[in-house]
Length: 95
Image (cartoon, rainbow, N blue to C red; front, top):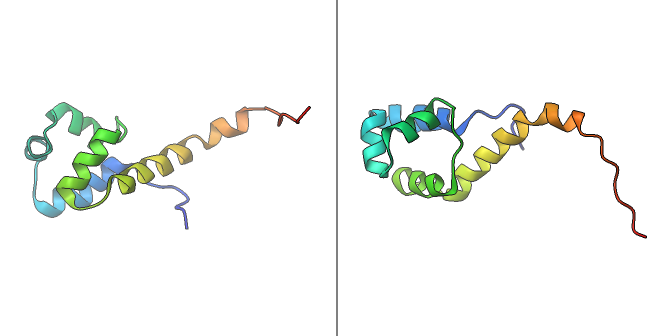
């Protein structure tokens, strides 16, 4: 069942990965092979999980890239709900 208000994947990284393992953003970024600023943007919910980051997170923390991408998609879809209501497009019928 889909979450009604999914959390940003960066919060999951912070709570379930960094805190759980006692890692700082700097230490985790070094281990992931990314810049501190890139990981900081993710954990502070200013950046989305990219496909590359999904692979890095899955290798470092034992999940799958699909898991991280699904979390990002669920978050993005929930954030876009107001946009859905604004778009007024009718279905195209076959000729």
